[in-house]
Length: 86
Image (cartoon, rainbow, N blue to C red; front, side, top):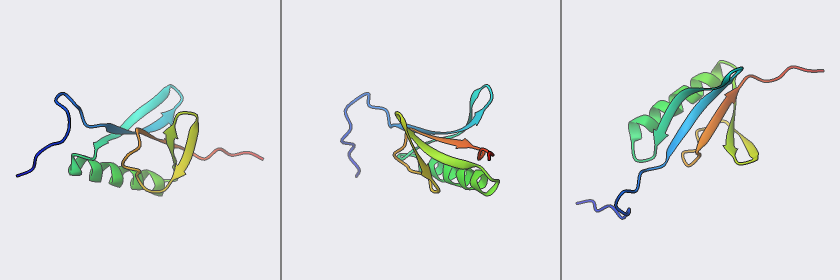
């Protein structure tokens, strides 16, 4: 028997995978570590986007750390296309 140690009314943290677009952010996936199917789906979608040429960063406050795998404890992972320049 599994007993939850969470306080009553506690909701599992949801992570979001979003794509940066001109209008702001477009949702791609949401996951919860308590929902293995949502976690796997987010992992697959992230890999699909990386394979398509997007880059991903973990958004934590003012810091954006590049990622190549889904950080399951992240609140948000942002997908964007690499910027050209020269």
